[in-house]
Length: 359
Image 1: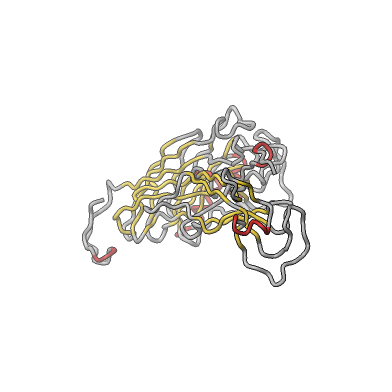
Image 2: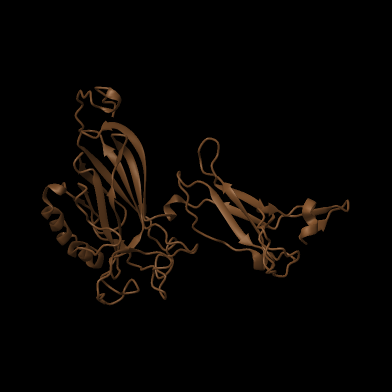
């Protein structure tokens, strides 16, 4: 078969890996054939010093699955009995197949049949939201404050489809809370406060809900209508170690961004700094399909869901970039405010270090 790059090359997007799942395997049938395939197994794209490769290539050869007896490209139903183990199709067993060619010296050889060219995409293109942080040595028992830099990534370059000329964010609302408080979550119905933020941008009802939560929450901080901005003074303590945030993507039917239940703690200390990369979500309360759609109440109300290439309106692929991904729309950048942290002796500090005030 003559390889035709115009017809036989394809791009497959979105393979996700992490520290617990760092091996890759793949298989693809060579068709038509009895039971021949190509692929690879247990490839780890991690360097010796523990970093992901930015790109790598895996060249693959043909294999026989050991399940059918065919010896040419036509399909065969003659089963191998008993089954054999998988084996590579090589020059040594060339009499069993027709995937060989002859080299310059007249010897049979088996050439590669495929190449997997893999390229790492930006972390921010993956997941519902992602926390990346730098550890401090401020123990969790000490209450702290974080300053937040809200960074706009929603623009016509990243999100070219129907990008509104008056695109902006409603005042971001950020609050620290206990585990028992929930601002919003995927697969849940929006509260009235979250619905109001998602549909109108007004945070007043949500702020009342936060206040009504009593001891489950600390004082929230809010930003202003607009784009990138600094929001200072988020209070966090050991009993309120989770952070949630929300802001409307405006104008829109009920689209918003934010995050929930992020904990800025690592090994008993507050993170010195961390980023939360966020993506667009649908509040499940308005069925409008464009940024300027008229109000169209969703009946019945749906659960909150992430806007992805498969969940955006079919005729209105909002937030989808030219690469086919729904790209990030904002970054919440947190920095620990160490100016007012009181230094104290504490032998229970991690490792029993006692006084450790080099914030």
